[in-house]
Length: 217
Image (cartoon, rainbow, N blue to C red):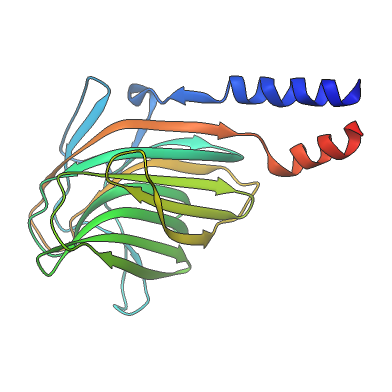
C-alpha cells in the first residue's frame, strides 16, 4: 500500500513539473535601452561596455549587464535557444543562475579572437572562466542547466536533442535562485541577441524523494 502511495506522489510531482516560462512575467536587472518580446521570444540590444565579473585575473568587479530573470527555489532544469549577432571580443549571451552579486553562474556563447566559444563563468566571491572553442561559427546554440542539490550541470546542444556537458559547478542549495537570460558586451558598442523557447522544469527535491522511498517500505 505504501509503495502505491509513493508511486502516486512521484507521478503527481512529475505530471505538473513541465511549464513554459511566460516571458512577460519576468523582470529586469540592468534593463537595456532596447528590447522586445514577440511570439514568446526575447530580443534585446545588449548594453555597451557591460559585463559580469568579480576580481580574479583582471582585478576589477563589474555587475552591470542586462539580465532578464524569474526566481525559483529548489531543484530545476532550465534551457533556452540563443541566437546572437556577435561582433567584437567578449560579446556573449546565454543563461545565468544568480543568488547574489557574489554567487552566480553564466553560460553560453562567447566571441573571442574571432571564434565562437562555449563559455562558462562560475563566481563565488571571485570569478573563474572556462571555454570550449568551436571549430566553426554556429547559427544558434541551446544551453541547458540542471540544478540538483548543491550542484549545477551545464550542457550545450546544436539541435535540442543531443546535449553535451560543459561544466559541473557548485551552487548553494536550499536557496532561491534568479534564473534567466543574460547578454554582455565588455568591449564593444552592443549587439543584438534573441532568446527562444525558454523553459524551466521543476524537479522534485532529491532528498525528499529518497525520504519518501525509504519510508514507503
